Length: 193
Image 1 (cartoon, rainbow, N blue to C red):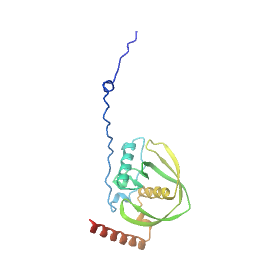
Image 2 (cartoon, rainbow, N blue to C red):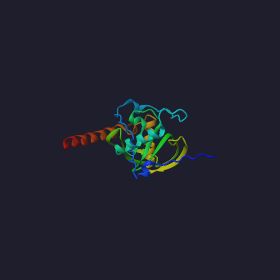
Image 3 (cartoon, one colour):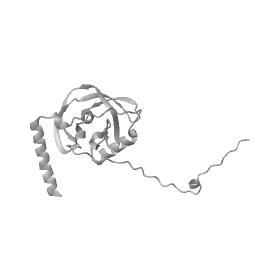
């Protein structure tokens, strides 16, 4: 003789709709442009022995990126030494753990910005197309091909993981010119406030 247990949901029986739980994701503070962590080469992320929950961490990077109106954000821009960045727009963001470039094609010279260097636009030459390999937040190996702004964003964020900031990729005169323009913009903004 089998005993069956009768189970029922009292909320359902009383026609009470459960209150949806709001999921909150932590956001991070961006480090300043002269923070030494931006010059560090970040170690491979170890999925066998992770120091953080990779999905939760990537979600926080995405929310921080969105909050700051960016297209890409690396862990070290938030003060963390994890080899991961996120990139995307709208609600379409992807986390790239342990990313690598497999091959490149072409070349584009376009203005670039960086959340770590607010209001500083610099013209940088980068490959027009990249074939890449990375791990997703589950540690699964993936490959992708990016072109145009997506390729530029991927390469910019990968540079961050390798301790390279975009100000190092321009000639000194171009950097000085960009910094002067930024200073003018910042003065104008301070007068508006």
